[in-house]
Image (tube, rainbow, N blue to C red):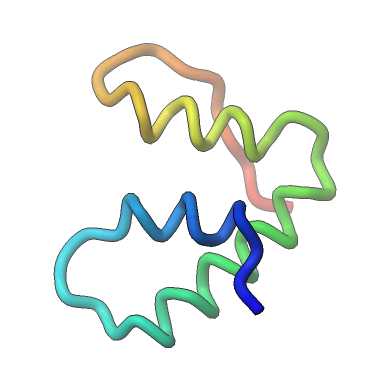
Amino acid sequence: FTSPAVKRLLGWKQGDEEEKWAEKAVDALVKKLKKKKGAMEELEKALSSPGQPSKCVTIP
């Protein structure tokens, strides 16, 4: 099962990375970012607005 958050972030994947590896990496990232309030939203905002200032997203 792939969560909606993982699916959204996989939409930003670039290049020809192996799908299974990319899914595992993004899933791990989502799990870490969910621990910090607002981090997922900030990451999605930064990805969807390249060149625009955004808050720093740190991975705990």
